[in-house]
Amino acid sequence: MWNTVGAGVITSALTGMAIPGNVVMRLKGAALGVAVGGLATLPFAYAVEELEKFLPAQATTTEESARVEDRKLDMTSVFIEQLESELEEYKSEEKKRRRRWFSRS
Image (cartoon, rainbow, N blue to C red; front, top):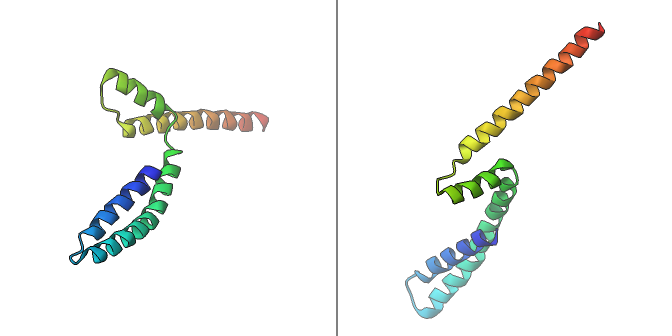
C-alpha cells in the first residue's frame, strides 16, 4: 500500500518542481504536490490492498510455481478455474438438496 502512496507522492512532487518560476515557487509546488499526491493515492492504494484479499487462494501457489518454471502467470485463467470449481461444487450441493427434498415428500 505504501509503495503506491510513495509513488504518487514522488510523482506529484516532481510535477510540482516542473512549475516555471523561481526556486521558492518550485518548492511550494513540490510541497503542494506531496500533499495532494499523498491524499489522492491513499484511497486508491487502500482499495488495491483490499482487492488483493479477494485473489484466489491458488494464486499464491501458482505464482510461486510460475516463478520456478519461468513462465508468465495468467491470473484470469486461475480465477476462471476457481470459479468453475466453485460452480461445480454448488451444483453438486444443489443436486443433493433437491434429492433430499423429493425423498421426504
